[in-house]
Amino acid sequence: MARDLLGIIDLREGRSILWEGFLESRTAQSSPGLADVVAATLKGVRDHGWDYACECVRQYDAPEMTVDGMRVTEEELAGAEVSETELEAIRASIARVRHFHEAQLSSLTAGWQRSKSGYDWSIATLPGSSGREGQRLLPARRAGIYVPGGMASYPSSVIMNAVPALVAGVAELVICTPPRADGTLSQAVLVAARELGINQMVKCGGAAAISLMAGQLACDVIAGPGNRYVAEAKRQLWGRVGLDGFAGPSEVTVVYDSTVPARAAALDLLTQIEHAPNNEGVLIVWEPEVAEQVIQMVHSLLEQATRREVMECSLLNHSAVVIAKDRNHALELANELAPEH
Image 1 (tube, rainbow, N blue to C red):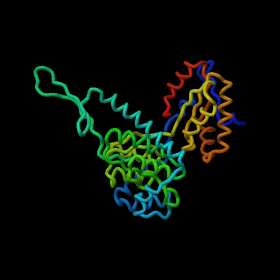
Image 2 (cartoon, rainbow, N blue to C red):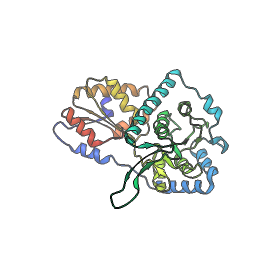
Image 3 (cartoon, rainbow, N blue to C red):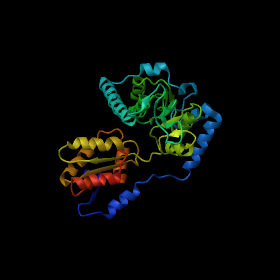
Image 4 (cartoon, helix red, strand yellow):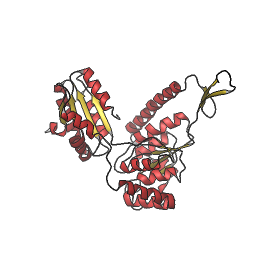
């Protein structure tokens, strides 16, 4: 049955044991030995550089990879092709993300003076002392971006991490992303990088990629989502290089009512839980009858999904439909969850 994919948590009569248990389960999980594996990888790349990183690529992603082949060539970037529809989507996404971050930067620096190097403001010190005091905001010299890959394609990770850096004025961007088994990269990822003018790309994933960016690629800051090995590598490198944070499983909450097509809610839910089997999805409604419509649509979309197995695992084990008392209660529950998406 379609409804079996998602557990129902009914909160119309108040909080429940199911809800409390769901909240309690939303913690980052670590497995025994993970820290040791990542520590060994970081040390290997630190001590042996590109050769060790290439060994990691051969072990986990592309068996025939060479050190020279790890760097994406100008020909690979120039020759990358996607459909006209996907190219339009990539360009529209870049424009929307750039528009947002340009407005964000203007808001943060309103009243600041702009200089060649960044932004600053200053005030005279209190009476009785001389001089001025203030702040300066300077862009990083080189930023590293991790883009998940291998089995899936995430041009969105290129856009969402590169555009803020470019708007901020970062001079150089480097992308690390795991290759497919044949040593190639997603065409969409290559096109997104090309559209943004990024020409430094390395075929390497996991903890080895984070170590390369922190060391051999001399990045001042590293950002981008990844699996538990990426997250653990960031944790172990904290304080040695600038980092965006430690990401747990991807999670999404969709607040839905009958004014929106069920397909839109189902797509929003599935788009964020396709990454890994431990991703979390929550659908919050206050009209119980519409929940069934979304669940049926989720079931229908799954039949065509290339990552169906991963999404079904996420839905069965880490996701739920929550029935709220009314709209305001639904928003309160969403705020309590404070999801990533």
